Image (cartoon, rainbow, N blue to C red; front, side):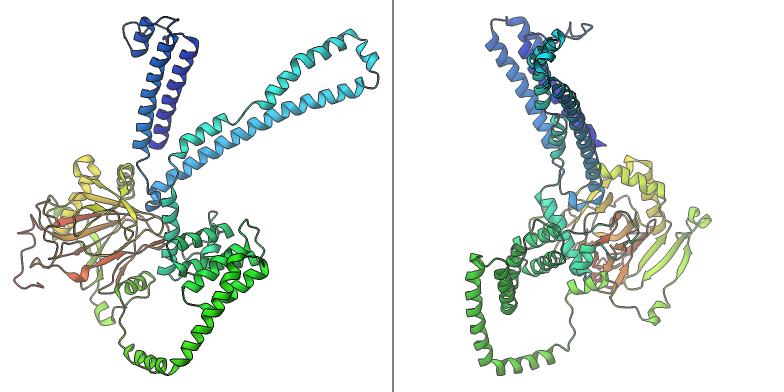
Amino acid sequence: MALHSIICLQWMFLQFICAADLSQRTDRPLRSERGTRANRTTLIDFALSTHSRSDSCVWQSVMMGVRSVCCFLLISLLKSSSAHSDFFTSIGHMTDLLFTEKDLVTSLKDYIKAEESKLEQVKQWAEKLDALTATAVQDPEGFLGHPVNAFKLMKRLNTEWGEVEDLVLKDMSDGFISNLTIQRQYFPNDEDQNGAAKALLRLQDTYKLDTQTISSGDLPGVNTGLPYKSTLTVEDCFELGKIAYSDADYYHTELWMAQALKQLDEGEESSVEIATALDYLSYSVYQQGELERALEYTKRLLTVEPEHQRALGNLKYFDYQLAKQKKAEKEQSTKEESKKEQETSDGKKEYLPEKRKYEKLCRGEGLRMTPRRQKHLFCRYFNGNRHPFYTIGPVKQEDEWDRPRIIRYHEIITEQEIEKIKELSKPRLRRATISNPITGVLETAHYRISKSAWLAAYEHPVVDRINQRIEDITGLNVKTAEELQVANYGVGGQYEPHFDFGRKDEPDAFKELGTGNRIATWLFYMSDVAAGGATVFPEVGAAVKPLKGTAVFWYNLFPSGEGDYSTRHAACPVLVGNKWVSNKWIHERGQEFRRPCGLKETD
């Protein structure tokens, strides 16, 4: 809605400029009908009262000044309103683009109707004259012998054909072009398109999806009966390959150029040429060290386009490199065998880097808790340590994990509260940032794809009520906690493994707050997610799925104040759906008597 308001304001500025331009042409002052401006002296009134009709050049200068001021204000408004970008980092903000596109389609249809109406008028005129001239040429002298026919011929050729000419030359696109020009400033830019493309590549890797699955739109969690399931065309696949190629990501370049080629081979019509896709394929395969396959693609390219200069040069080069490689491999075959045996024996130590553990957990392939540990996890009704309110109406509490202890609270936030939080935060959503550990400056990061906003308790009773609920259930003081942070994830939105608390090598992490370290985290899930989007803890193998209306809670610090490194967690990429969360980071200050310190480091 804010988008439409800004467009209306900009349109008013344009109308004012046009009005100023019109007054300049007619040398007439701008007056209100009822003389409401009689007691107000404006720049235009002053100019009119001090310059006569003969001083037209001075008048034009004044009007140009007024128009310049208006243009400056308009440009300022455009800049301020278009400062918001990074559409791909928030599904919530991307919904505005759908309404923008719908408005443009309506405007385009109006333009089509106007063109059709114009053509219909021309068609009717042509049909009428076709019948008239067909009759007239059979007996020209007899036809013109009638004085009315002679008069109407003179009138048609002198007047009416000029009107037809004006009608044919009339441009019906002005309204559509004006609307498109105003709306274009809110369009996604190259960064958004590249961000959305890289999100697809990230989802492909994290969830081990092949290109055919993505291209067909048959993603896990997508109901096949949904009307909005979409597929990728050859042009789409080719574009994904080009974006990967521009980042020197030859692995994904190969995958998506191969998919584009596959769809072309299956007969899909496209403006993309087979030779172009093969050119990208051969080079990307070569860059990955697969000379034989690069040679195969090059030979196929030459069958399609025998005079392709680059392919002719590459064919000789690949042949030479392949012969050289085979010779080197033959000489070192013995050394390679012994090296492989050594690698096989060393590889028995199963070590998984954090990224692989994180991605396995996102796919649901992580560690499984032993039955012995599982039997200590329970569901219960919790009264907030005998809090009067929750003694009467206890909350549903479920143990999600034991070490660290992660607790889920069910039906802890209502649908109405969720909608109000989203309503308050959506206009403020900005690209989520991280603190640079060296400079301390907040900056965007590729590993955090979301937008966030902060809500203070005084802004709305719902926010205040939610804060009080967190305090009552956890028993911790939220007066020193950070404001409620609301986050909406974008295309393939994620937040890679991180700690919520400040480590020892970050002594000044929360110094400006003056409330100590982040002792605990409370996380609301404000939407269900069809596929992906889990909160995972790679160090321990825990995976918590987002369930709308629930919240999870864990301590980041031991009672001693030492950080619990097992709480390192991540938000998995959202594969299908729209993920909304809000969280409360509770700090140490104010918890001295609510969670007393322990004597041991891990107490």
